[in-house]
Image 1: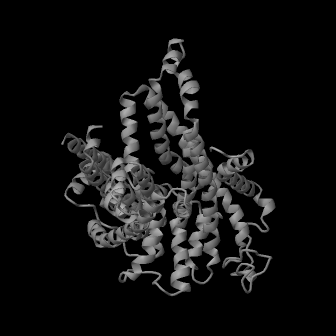
Image 2: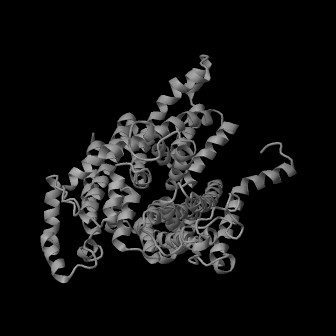
Image 3: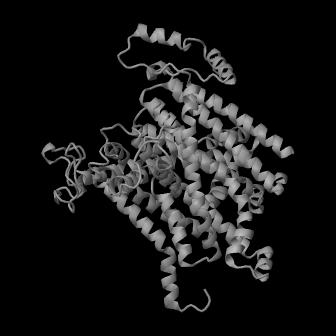
Length: 304
Length: 285
């Protein structure tokens, strides 16, 4: 129980840190007005903008307003559309979640069976292929892979749509492009866990009972993989959330990453700040859930 | 290996080091390309000939050996731009990692050796940075800082120092209580001397390994920023900038995007091969 409380408090501190960090990021150059207004704006326009945005107030007052706003769920307004930032974000969130979960599903579908087989037969041809695939994931940039997939499967073969979000078929290419980079970590993890479990007593017993390799894998290995898997799930999803900026841009996927990219091109800093804060909180929350789940599944780590 | 003959053990040794050799060779080749670009590239990086624009690579119909990898819509030679682009990627990877490793190791040694408030503060800061999606963090920072090579190196150097900090702090904590450090201390060695001569050398292996992987990550992230139009200025030939342009013409002139991506993948391959080899060497000792 103590672990759960301290771990949650830790996340709360991280959240506060993220709040401060994001506030100062946008003010890093000293004059946020210069970043937000076009170069042609004259001094009077700048001053009017500064007052309208409350940027003429002392820094502490600015931070206080921002902090109170965030506590009430007010993330400011977009410069371009004048809509509330939170509204814009929530509108785009489902698409990004769909993409990230699709990519995660792709990772699991490939990494679990391949990692299991590779761990059961280390040194085999299949093991080498699996490790090669894991290595390829580290080496091929996802923004390039996304473009190659469009060229092969959308333009060349015409099997799948090349952009937009329109049904399950349109999810395939972006999810594969996004997930490919995370494949290696999950595959290696599954393989190592299987390798370790292979020599464990419970597996020897199961084998002695005459279980075949398939039921061995499904009934005894897979459940034991749940623990290491949960431990990296938070990290993986955070990574996928970040990578979605490229992938959503390439595939014109209407999610948060694409929104962030447009906001940056438009110099819409209030929106950039809001999205960054939102994603940061989301990532910290994910990590907390993943860690708590991990501790619940494996009570030993609470006492470390 | 039991029962292996001398000949097969040599072959095995070569096989074991093959990845490291190939990685080092590739990296050396890339570094030479970058350094000797003005002499090796057939054209200048921004030398455009509109009459020769949009040519495909030589093996496709309409291509010619005058532009082996084709040209872009401004008639600039893709191969030449790739060779010049290696400069940006390798500079960011090399100097970025140098800064990150230097800064992270320095702070990690201090925090791990002395502990206290400094340690608490630095560890909290690095945990904060590491808990955010890294890509989003660098995108926002790059937007605020503006497009220049110096800014990109600074950005990756500072944010990347967090992983080096974490490694060095942890190892220093572990080494701090070892008997040989106790001996060095009782012989009257100053803290600086102990950190520099007794702690840091023990970290060389893991540091080098991490540096190879981080270098590859920085090459990726620089290209990614360039792809979003946030890295070096658009007129600078970099692989990321080439990809950004190539994406706009993806379906009509695919070679514009395919080759820069291949260059990035090859560079990452070299650095990862080297990193894997280093990791195995460190694990063996």
